[in-house]
Length: 558
Image (cartoon, rainbow, N blue to C red; front, side):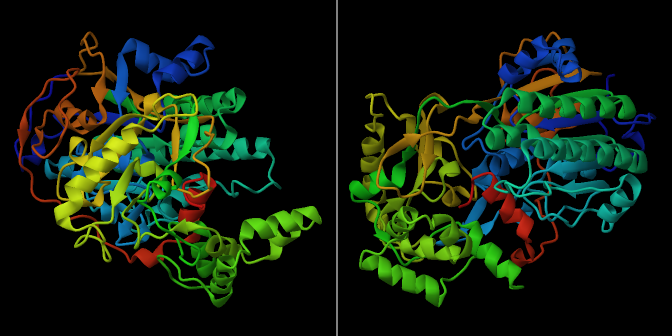
């Protein structure tokens, strides 16, 4: 179908006299062609296969860093993290931190741009959308918001639960809960996937949106939790495919896009403990009395006690453990001693968990010249005077320190003598915008994404990497009205998705977007849009236990 671009404010022409969904966006976290193609051969995901083979498909290059809380906002805003501001699982306030939320996203998501042209939207399970924007339509936030998130409009979650029954954002178990069998965990995955599809179909009926976006998170999580076990992966993808088919049948959209935020694949290299390396090179200072960052455990403890918190301060017991550590009584030594007498499990169960945190060696962020804050940021932060609360690097020395660090990191090799990094570059090569200072100063990209980084101090540089983790190439597929299915596209970029959605509606995309229209639809051009004002903010200390528990379950927080 060829759409006439509507004029701003001319609502009567928006739908061109048609009913039903104009454009559907399906998000599969970690979806990628290598995984798809294996499942195509086994005829396990026929609906996804139909989209990819009947329409047009290609690898979708992710951004740096290619992780959920930064990549999905880049996808639905069309801008790099230096513009939108969501850098990782946590945002940093000096040396302290908070769990990332939509308050960190400082650009229009595509549904608020569509709203300015009179188009309505239904969005289900999109990451980093809590608290939600106000627009014509409905939104249920996803990862990494709270378990019972504020939705748009108010009361929507209760309506959905009344209509379809149970609806949850997260599994009903913790990842380390050994009382739940693997089969029960996978059954819970299937329930969560079904909830996404059922909620989306219900809201599509209730709101009759022009644009729909439903995201499925579990195809990513299954790789992390079950280490790429094919049987588990296949079961989760089959459940996802079933819900995609049900959504397509029920909503009958004119145009369909399928995208992922990054790919997934085996890691055959090492975990590189970069702060250990930086310590030996004289950049990192350490302490046994700091609180470190970030950690789920202390936040969980305060929340369970009924306290609101963004971070934590060590208790008297934890400080005592730190003092003991200075005299050689570390948590590791205590554990070794307990293991010798068969009491390690008892100590783990009953001892204050933060004691080991304060007693073990940590990065002293305030005293260090440079350090890695979080492994998923893929980069090194310089402790710059005037930017950080206790910066130690004068601005006049910033470039020389950075150049020396880049040269040092470029020379890091594996035990076999192979380069750990394929790219070590100044941040300007990947980030620009109002939030550039919130990104890393030096970008460190592991060779072929075969190696993983760790910010933890263990005294050794290398360890086995997690067997499956994120790869740079996700997937893009398009099918339906207005799509040129013969378009010669070898690959596209994550930033291109939002401009392409706008073009599918016959609308100009924002001139702030960093991507271009993928040539499967006709480009309309770009124009300036009113400044994004963001969602109605809620206090950060309203984040509930489930937010950080999920990060801990996935290994993103300690």
